[in-house]
Length: 238
Image (cartoon, rainbow, N blue to C red; front, side, top):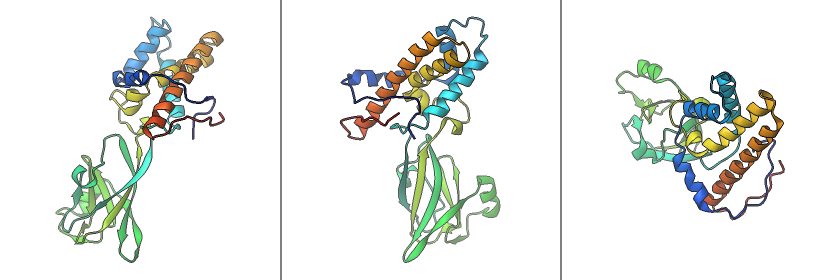
């Protein structure tokens, strides 16, 4: 669902040099708070709580937009007889910034079996030595590896459905995550708009912040279309 309250025109001819700025934005939640405090001249940290709330509001709003780093998808990998754990060498796409939504075990001439998720602690308790083999019925996830239990005894295909991690999936916002790498300026501009509009009650500054937000939104949509091989960004009616 694209961001409400935003308008979009056909793609402008902005230089790709603007997009290259993304690599400079590997910053954190704390850095964004400090930067906004500086930009609104909050020298006494009077609005620190409101700034944090505005950033979180901006993140919740912006993660509805399907950018190139905020996608959903699926992939397949093959099980191996006697092998419990499957990592990057098996799936070719297990990243720290992805969240597993579900797994299906495909079988020849049979309906796919949805695999249940269990925590590593529960999986370890039920299958301490991983010696039991059979048709997997549940999975767990540890250290960027998927564990299937019971351990597969035949070669089957597993379908994995995933999505990009939301900010709420990150254990700490002090760590770098895709939103602060690729959308730092977008989030900051929207947070300032929320702050000026709802807290500081400054319509003029709110309008400036919203225009900045629109510019950053257009830039990210342009980059998303470019990476997906689209030449134009069409209006979505917002």
